[in-house]
Length: 205
Image (tube, rainbow, N blue to C red):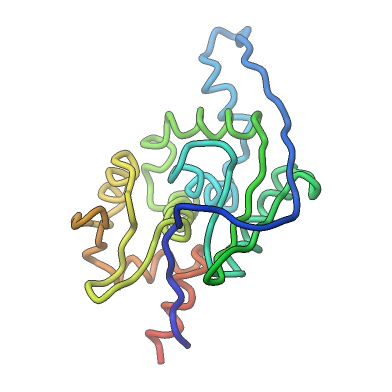
């Protein structure tokens, strides 16, 4: 089976869902920082961390994924529903060359994502299911493969540091961050990444 690894394109497409839920900043009576309190409200299970990894690639509204891989879209939409996004607030658009963009507006969830990302170096400091799911979300958003190997396009510096700390070493060339220890990366991330699961099955043949 061929691996279908794609990069986020520059523009969207087509038809389906949408809307927004609004969150409001407020002080925390305990005296703890608002960002810490909001992070605790976000249940950081592997699925949420996967979505958080996707969001970290853009850090802007709407929360979205653009890909040619239907399974990535299904996973993205499924996690969004699990996080409380209503089906009629999701939108899926189709475009040229088989590209699909799935996205939704949810200001309260975005605030929780942003507050968690402020502490990402602490939250994802250990090589566990949460951290590996987070990296999987980044790869399924901006990952790809060319003749030089696996890469992540436009890797955020904070995410690059997390990857290094987890033992995934990268080198940059033309805006693409190539993963040096790709076999180890695939072995550890494939269980959480839609695209790398194809790569693992393909390599095993």
